[in-house]
Structure formats: structure tokens, C-alpha cells
Length: 333
Image 1 (spheres, helix red, strand yellow):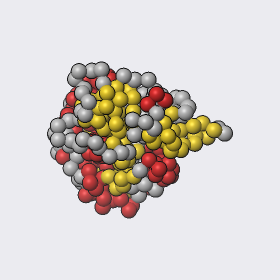
Image 2 (cartoon, rainbow, N blue to C red; image 1 turned 180 degrees about the horizontal axis):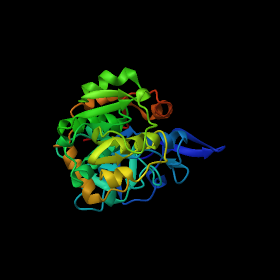
Image 3 (cartoon, rainbow, N blue to C red; image 1 turned 180 degrees about the vertical axis):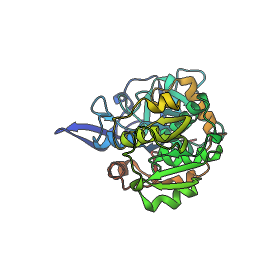
Image 4 (tube, rainbow, N blue to C red; image 1 turned 90 degrees about the horizontal axis):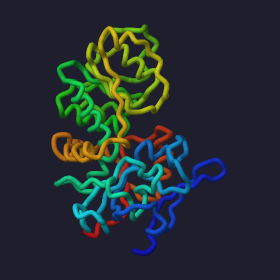
């Protein structure tokens, strides 16, 4: 391998600037395994990093991209041989270590997960960190005894990658999913993924009292702020709310009343810091009982490295519907 294409982000004039350029293996962040990247994806976190809308990148310049799938080129680990199909997500990949928007990646071997049987690299990146985050949410819910029979399960920020995949997977598991979105044009789309109903975010009154009528068995919140506070006030006894995003706000203004009178729980999810053993197990589940049914509909675009900047800007602007897979290079396998 000689020179290859990467999307590298620089900090110039107090702004993030990204450009596709040539690189070499020796110029990549240190690591002991090299993979040929065939596919990546664009998550909201990637869009924050590319545009500089969020303080995601810990050093500059850096190759962005928190997801990658492809094939092992060289490895010191006997369990990962040349040609093996693998996934890399989480840890510091694409935030403090050169990431997946490159034709090759060099990473610590302990960050690498074998691709589950029956799953292609493109399918893995259609799922990506968004779908892995949903699997982690499901695991947290199961560990805290959430059940479909507790009542309707609400998903906020439903038109995004995490939201759409949450509707798909949770409805598959038997939950009566209620989606929340401020985009009327996506309501039919969300119903098609398995939502039982869709609420218009603009019609919800978030200024209620300290405790309101219990409506939800539980929920996954991608929004934060007033929406998350409203969920604490309207979730039924012993329900669990997963806090997974901050698309609107990072703060949470609430009272202790929902916790001491209804026993609700707010559970946090950090996909980047997920222990490696759990990471392996959840990727296997994403190929079996948690396999999404509507990936072809959820993924609306397959783009190239050169298209990522424009897509990231649209994602931050809120004009994107669905997920994008990035085709980095062709498989040699």
C-alpha cells in the first residue's frame, strides 16, 4: 500500500476545516493492527466533529469518522488474521485517534471486533454507532427489568439514526413505540419502521407541573433539556428512561418527585466507553435477535469521502432524513 485517501480535519482561523487528501500508513495514529476500510457512516457526532459545531475532536489535525468496517491487512493477534472482516467503533476512534474516514486505519488490536457471521461490512455500517447505541439501550433496559407490558414506549428525536433504529428494534421486541418528531414529513416513514403512533414535537406542552399523568412505560431520549425533564414527569411507575443524546440542550431541570414517588430511573448510555466484552456480545445480537428489519429504508444515502462535509453540514442543519453510509473503498476479498 502506498498513498491513500483520507478526510482530515484541521483547526484553522478558529474553525474546523476538513479536506480530502493523500496520506500514508506511517502518518496515521499509532496502533498494532492495520485494516483496509471499505465502509463507514456519518453519525451526529461525526457531523459535530466535521463542522466544529461540537467540541468533539481532542487534537488537530485528525482523520474523522467514529465508525469503520473492513478487512485486516496486518495483525499481531492470532485471533485476527489477514483478510478477516472486522468492525471498529467507540473508544477514541475518530475523536482522539485517526478514524474511519480513510482507506486504511491503524488502531490498537483491543478496539477491533470481528464482524458477526452473516453480516457484511456495509450492513455493519448501516447499523454503525447509531444501531450499536440502540443495542446498548436495550441491554440497559433489560438489565433494569423494563418490559413491553409496562406500556407505550416513547422515542424522542425519532427521525435521526438512533431514533429510527430504536423504533425498528424496539417494535421488533414487542414494544408499542410512540415516536416524537418535529418533522411532519417523516411521520409516515416512522410508522413504516414500526411506530404505533407519532407525536408532533411542536404540539407537546413541556411546561407542566412537577408530576403529571403517567403515560409512558419508558423511553429513549435523544434530545435532552426540557424534553427529558418532561419524560421524567410523564413516565409511569418503575419505568426507565434512557438518556442518549443532547440534540437540543445539555441541561436537565427536574425534581426528585418522579424518582421518590414513582421509582422511575434515568439510565445513561455511553457507546464510546462500552466494555469490549459487552461490545462483542451486542454486535452478535445485532446480527441475530436485535437485527434491524428496515435498514434499506433507514439508510437513505450511500456517499463518498468527498461528500461527507456537505452531508455533515446538512445533518447539523436538521435537513437530513435517515442515515448515510460512506463507501470508502472496494473490498479485495
